[in-house]
Amino acid sequence: MTTTAIAASGLRKAYRDKTVLDGIDLEVPAGTVFSLLGPNGAGKTTTVNILTTLIRPDGGTAQVAGHDITAAAAGVRSAIGVTGQFAAVDELLTGRENLRLIADLKRVRSAGPIIGELLERFDLTGSADTLVSAYSGGMRRKLDLAMTLVGSPRVIFLDEPTTGLDPRSRRTLWDIVRGLAAAGTTIFLTTQYLEEADQLASQIAVLDQGRIVARGTPAELKRQVPGSHIRLQFTTSADLDAAARVLPAAARNDQDLTLEVPGDGTVQSLRALLARLDEYSLNPQDLSVHTPDLDDVFLALTGHPNTEEIAR
Image (cartoon, rainbow, N blue to C red; front, side, top):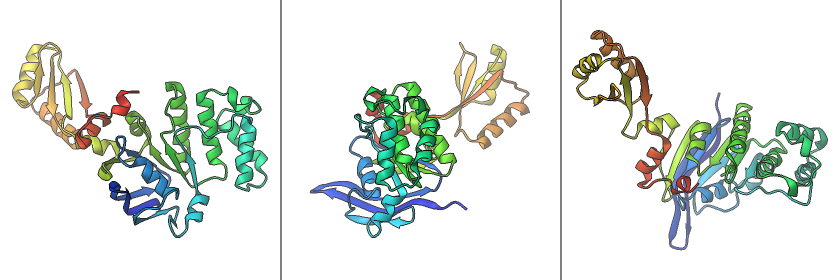
């Protein structure tokens, strides 16, 4: 039975006369990757800071790993790990020493085997006794995440974890995040990369001007935006003509011998289209389903493109 790792109701936060969070509700099942998207100033970092007990909300309630963020803040802190936008590692220590420091702070007993396992898991064994000042950006980020895992937190908050990383390092961290979720760890992810949320998250919430404006799986969010269609390609102009008569609402491209049939991208609509084609003995050479991406969703829901992504 799936349990809830994070639950928030009516969270509010204001600074003087500026409302940052205007009554948001969240529910994150245990063992999943949840992504909070939003433009600069939407309230993403404030949400993370409230859920990790760094700041108190002005209103509303929230529980993380079964602990109330206000009444049982110590319980929340003991159950979570937090990785910020910039790697919080000590450059004057080695990778192993950084992990040992965190283990000591968390009072982890017999930490040696745990440290060794984390170094191996994050492919840092060969550089474990090298000063972190000599690490690449990707290595520092991996060490930072490894340090977050000391003590086996049940919930991990990742605030833009791949900012500044090259594509290879980013995908390595994606694999690590997937592995954590598969092992039962709950991941709360904020990211400026829409592709990252699309790749990792099973649920996404879009935050804009302090309010949740949409939520759902990546596929569900994409289906909310007009533009989904099924592309049919034919081998001859005669076949294209025949299909165009059967499907008058389709957009036609004579040069490519294709039709673009409006649809919602669901299996049901695809089955209905195939049945209609079969009814008239029409056999396209190729068929593909096209849906809007998260950039389109972001633009439709917030009224402006994801400028952070564009500036990448």
